[in-house]
Amino acid sequence: MSEPTVEDLLRRLAPQVLGALVRRYGHFDTAEDATQEALIAAATRWPRDGLPANPRGWLITVASRRLTDLLRAEQARRQREDVVGQRVVAEWRLAPSGHRSTDSDDSLILLFLCCHPSLSPAAQVALTLRAVGGLSTAEVARAFLVPEQTMTRRISRGKQRIRDSGLPFAMPDPAELPGRLATVLRVLYLIFNEGYASTSGPGLLRADLCAEAIRLARLLRRTMPDAAEVTGLLALLLLTDARAPARTGPYGELIPMAEQDRSRWRADQIAEGTALVVEALRRGSPGPYQVQAAIAALHDEASGPEQTDWPQIAMLYEVLTAMDASPLVALNRAVAVAMADGPDAGLALVEKVAADGRLARDARLPAVRAHLLERRGDPAAARAEYRTAAAQATNLAQQRYLNTRADRLTDG
Image (cartoon, rainbow, N blue to C red; front, side):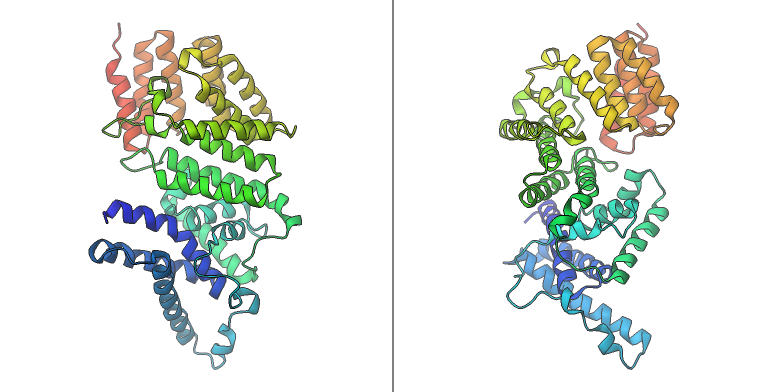
């Protein structure tokens, strides 16, 4: 088995193994340490010895042994006479015999546990991205635009809160689900975005993260089939991921949507996502994910950039702005307005986003400005903006794309 395949499998199994350990033993923070050590052992041994018959069971066994060692070491350090009694796991933390098998997938339960209301919103998202999404602390820090040390402390506090609170490892009661949903949806959205446009590294796409976000969204929809925003998010992820095969070239280079071979888009995902959009919007309570999914459907159904219904997309972005006043939504709206009404109209909106200040160091702001300046016929200004965007980008594929765009422009 090739090493990249092992890496993909380990990333998919990591939250399932962590969930199994937390269900069985509790001790969230120690269980995560044990899971990471089991993953390291697998990454070393499986490429050499071959894949075990039951990879998930192998990981759970190794992680369980390591967890036992870690707990014994902690007991020894504390040197308490009653340590054994204190470390007996509470009944609600144990899976009764026959209640859950080692083949069960606790990823969704783990997701809701990390999004518990006793945690701060920032800790909820950060901890879930780390424990369920499999992102490194550095990647989570970049997603939040904060230093890595700050994110390390935030995640540690979240794990400490879960450990001290005695939270049950179980799905919330049905009455609690709606109140917990917004954070869960946001986390899945961030996990997918990190996979679709990686913040760092040589490659643009991380298909494993996209697939995990879609898998969890499907699980969530089966749990909450009447929640329109859950359906809307699943539709958005499917419609966006449908373009992935055409998004990079043979050498991993980024290909913008306007230049993509749309015959390579996944027609089955487009059909499923579009049907889900229609189903969600018929409920009559559109939310941000449903609106974004409707925008994605308009892109996916167009045979080319010239056939795209840009006025409709601009209108939908205006609706979305009323729901979500984030600078990224405003930046996307500027592009849609530029495509519908001309680059000058879009550039005026871009300057408003720039004045906001929240995207001051984000490569997407100068990249959009460069694109619109190029469309307006100002190559010198566009080239300078492309250079600025490339300098601010942290992903190598994006850097190469932006520098290539700059190199192609001449003052004439």
